[in-house]
Amino acid sequence: MSQVLSSAWALLLGMGLLMVGNGLQGTLLGVRGQLEGFSTFEMSVVMSSYFLGFLGGSRIAPDMIRRVGHVRVFAALASFISAVMILYPMFTNPIAWSLGRVLIGFCFSGVYVTAESWLNNAADNANRGKALSAYMIVQMAGIVAAQALMLAGDPAGYETFVIASVLVSISFAPILLSISPTPSFERTQPMTLRQLMTASPLGCVGMFLMGGVFSAQFGMSAVYGAEVGLTLAEISTFVAAFYIGATVFQYPIGWLSDRMDRRLMIMAGSIGAGLGSILGIMMGDQFIVLLFAALLIGGLANPLYSLLIAYTNDYLEHEDMAAASGGLVFINGLGAIAGPLFMGWLMDDAIIGPSGYFMFMAGLLFALALYAAYRMTQRPSVPVEDTGVMAAVYPSSTAMAVEYAQEFAIEADQDGQDDAEAA
Image (tube, rainbow, N blue to C red; front, side, top):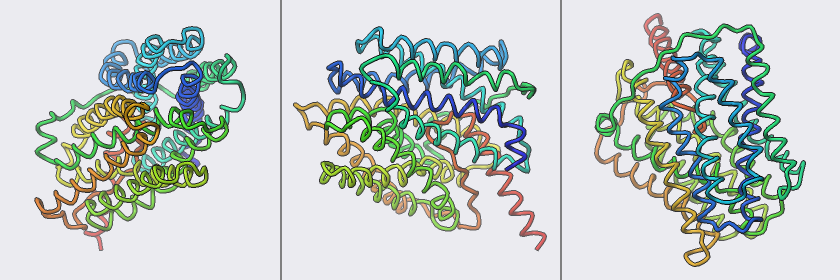
């Protein structure tokens, strides 16, 4: 790990600051929108817009990088992010915020693609897994740290927006001033959705459903907290609980999934997270129980993203895995766009009210559990000794990080086969 930190510390520091800025603006808008009197559906459109931009950026950014290079793309997109964050409190209406979120989502996607390709270039076969782990830890730590900064200013004013903008502005200084060479850039064409659905129906359906669950956590958790009357400190703690759970449970679930039928783990994780959602519906008025529900949902639902990718890989040849990753991330993005829109409709007082937040996630999670159980009757499991390694990737990563995780999983699988043959 020390080798990874010495070669990529500037990149990890910059990405950490970016994630703090991103996590801060997501929660801040949820709170400020409630103060401005936006309806839950208007806020759902605002939150969904980020994922629309993110999905578009993941498709366009690679071509931008090939044309003008990593440094220019990174600096330009980060500058746009900083500018939009400053403009939010100046134009407090849902249309302006939605347009800003589309732009910010697009820019963050491009920045992540650029940074992830840099990270992969800084790693080699011996430490790629550690580099990815460090990157994922920095991502989650940044979002959690952002919640503490919510208390640094009044969300009804400008201060917190300025803090988010400043963090993004200084985030690219350590990266652009470092001496790390810019890498060559190649991108695998994604597999068609028809091919993906044929290879792994559960992987495709699961990634779409998990897109909705993740967008509920990243985009709508602060909206829910504001709607039920939580204090600013309570909203920050509630949002952070999802990501703390994701970080704590990711590796134990990965370890277990490499030693059993992954469909059982998908089903168990979905049921557990679904029960956490039911707990939020029934006892969400008790803050400690609400935190436990968030911890359980985040801890059991987020690792399903990596688990579904690993499960899909079990039915693919090594040379097809990178192409499949792009398609799976695209499907997940479609779910992330649709999720907040439907959730915002459910959370309207004329439909269900704030409890629609947890009802929506419970519905998606139990649907995934049922579909996993159905798929177990349609296809025999892959023998455990023939499955690959699950590489930890968070839903906030782009297809670029997933491709690199695939490379690590393939290398680990091949090393395992070589060790078995040598024994």
